[in-house]
Every structure is written in structure tokens, then in C-alpha cells.
Length: 448
Image 1 (tube, rainbow, N blue to C red):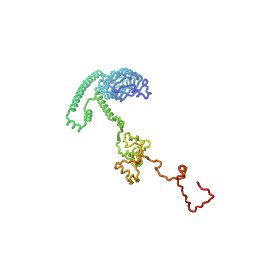
Image 2: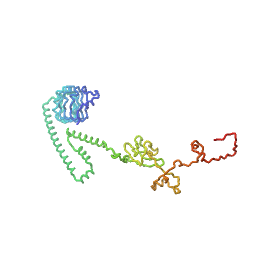
Image 3: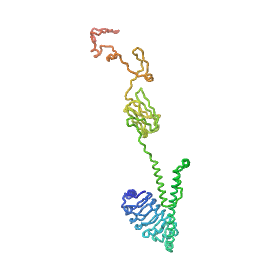
Image 4: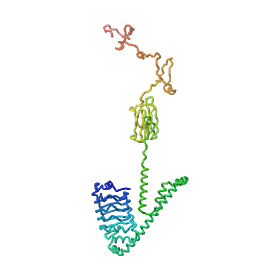
């Protein structure tokens, strides 16, 4: 149920800078309003009021609108014309397509001396015999009824035999009210029968339910029954149709809303990282032993924009977000996040991640080297890994290593470092052999 609130009127008063106390015109049509309230206290200067196409069953709370000139209540559920005596300046009243069955209620408009136009098209009272004559004779101030101008001759003809006309109108009004009460009783009994049939269907056997589901779903069946079951056009049926459509609309909106999924667990409470592949992408993880790095090839969509991806490399795992979906993989070895690189392939569009290892591995050279017994070892790194043979460095059995003599050198007397280490007493003098064409000049001093 929609209520007339101050916020609703302010939103409809944008043309008046959202001021409601000085408002002269407001449109509240198609708001599913079921009651008129607060308007006569908040909008005393109102001249035009639009309330058509709502669910209003009664005219009320407008008697203090002394300046009101036009009231539109078309397409509502109004049964009786009432509570308009206080609208002194009312000139036009529109009650098109309502449920006014008491034609005698138009007599309450006699005090609205400025009323010139009245619309009652689509109401049950318009089917009464002598309807137009009765209204014209009852409201002499009218100039137009149901969009048709009232002539002077029509007024004179309507006033002739007015008492007899009133009697016939009252008889038809009583017949309508009795018929309306009877229709309400029949409608109530039909509703109870429909509820009983629904209960019997719910208690049917499984085989019958399967047959019913095979031919037509339960929702479609109820929808078909609701719209194809004949019923009288009454305020109750109109209100029921509105609530049915409203419930259907709310159910549709609720179905369109995506269910909020709980966040996926990426790291457990004990700190263990999980492997996750929400986008369901193919990938390959390889180890480049030559460059000491790990390479991840993630087959992302070829034409997807790179801005829709986010890469997070951690020392022990890598996480890639692809359009909000998480791909997470635990790495076989620790890597250096700061030195890692990410790039897209020019041909396939795949995402390539190069992640250097944090600690290098000692690798055996392919060149042969002698062992302790003089034999050569021709075992390559691939063979040792194939046979799972651990490789170790060779250490001298004596337990002491002469670091200074790891590399053998020939001592020379050239250079300040070697000259300081040369002992002339123990060193063997070197014999210098002159080259061909050498001439010994005694005047040249010897080189030291």
C-alpha cells in the first residue's frame, strides 16, 4: 500500500521549487495510492489535483481545499460521491470509470455552485434509465455532462416529471445494490471452492503430479486460471488484479537479483594456500633450469583487454584476477616477486609470467673431470636427475685445504708483490739468452 507522504508531494512539486505550502497544482496519478490524506493540511492553496489511475475507494480529506477548481479521480474504486461540499470553487470533477452505483449521491454536489463539468462515463449508474435527465435536473449549475453540452431545452425537459424520475432511479439503485451484494457472496464462495481445488491438487498422487508437470507447470496453470476465470468487475476484483500483478513483478525483480555468493577461501585459517581456478583456464607451469626461473603460461582469452587482469606474485604462490574471477596456484619453489615479469603473447594472447627463483641450485658441469682413482666421470646433470642420484662436491680426505696453492703459479721476479716474496739466496739465477742480432753496448747501463 502506497501512502501520500510529504516526500512524495515534494518530488511532485519540482515546478514550484519543491515548496508544498504554496503549491497550486500536483499530479499524483499512477502511484497505487489507496487513500487520500494530508493534502488538505499541506497544500491549502491547491487548485488542480490529479489522482487518476490509483486504488482510492473513497473521496475524503479534501473538504478544506477551498481554492480547488479541478479534481481528477478517474480510474479508481470510488463507490459514492461524497465529502466535496467544502470545495467551494470546484468547477470540474472527473469520475470516469469508477464504481459509482448510487446515482442519488450526485445530490451532494448541489452546494458546489461553480461546478460546470461532470464526468461519470464508465460507472454503473450511467446504465440506469433516465440517468442523464436525473443528473441534469438535480444539478442545474452543470453546463457539460460526460463531455456533452447541456442545452436549455434539455434542462426544461428534465425538470418535467422529476418526481417520477426520482422514483424510478431509486428502484434501479436498490436493484443494483442487491445484485452487487449477491455477486460478492458468489465471488466469496468461488474463492473458497478454488482454494479447495488447489488443496486437492496438492494432495494428488505422485503420478498425477508428474503428468501435470509434464503438460504444464504449476505457475503457468495458476496464471491461466487467474486470468481466464470469469469474475464481475468490482473494486475487489480490480484490487485483486493489481495485487496479483504487483506480486508477480516483485517475484520477477527478486529472481533477477543475483544471489550474493560467499567469498571463496583462498588461504585457510592455518595459513595453507589453496589452488583455485574460478575462470577455468588452461595453464602450464614449467621450470627453466638454465635461467633459474619458473614460467607460468595462463591461457586467458585472446581478445580480452589486459586492463581486466590483475597479477599478484608472492614468494610461494601466484594469484591472477581475470574479470573478477580468481586463479591461484602454489609454486614448487620460492621466487622473487620484485624480479618477476608479466606479458601477453603477441600470437596467442596468453599471459606469460617469468618468476626467478629466490635461491639458485649448484649444477654439475658437462666437462669430464678425474676422480680419486683416475677415472673420468661422464655423468651429465640430466642423467643424475633421471636416476635421482644426489650430486656432492669432492672434498680432500685429509680434511685440510691449502687455499693459497689451489691454483699453481710460476714465480717471477717481476712485479712488486712477487719481488717482495723472492729470496735471492734460495732462488736459482735465471739465464738470459740474447736474441738474434743483439749487440751489447758497454755504454748502456744494465737494466735492473
